Image (tube, rainbow, N blue to C red; front, side, top):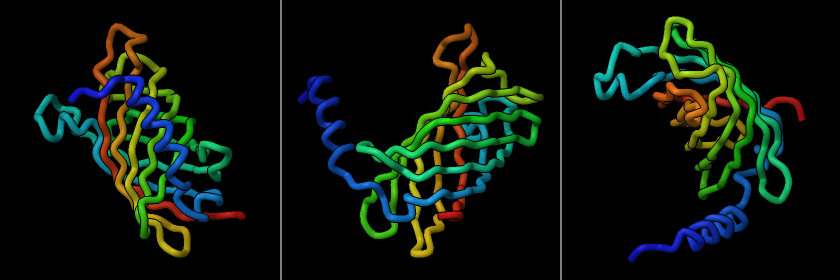
Length: 172
């Protein structure tokens, strides 16, 4: 049975409005550090020599408003000198217990260095993080995200990253 695209959109909107923001900890600023694999297709499918390791930091502002979206900004670098900075938003959903799921979207400035040519300095970062939030507000999670220029350039191979991220609240 095929679902009408309009019904999919309505279902998604209802789901977003129904699910609560993850927890009180999302009402605080947090700082995170992460590390993992850049361009996972090359790692898992032997599609080239883009076998870069990635590390980065992220700053997350409190979630707010009807949609429960919180701003975020970050910087990442690979061991082959590529780096990027991004700014966007994320929406954490509480799934019960300590588990949160957070989709995100950001505008990204990308510098290739000796790494993968993504086709443009302007890229877009879309991701999904699954984390376990502790009572003290810190969390440990795994995030999968995609960098792409949305075909604004003739070259648009995109890149998928998988990393582990640890965040701690501060301020507030």
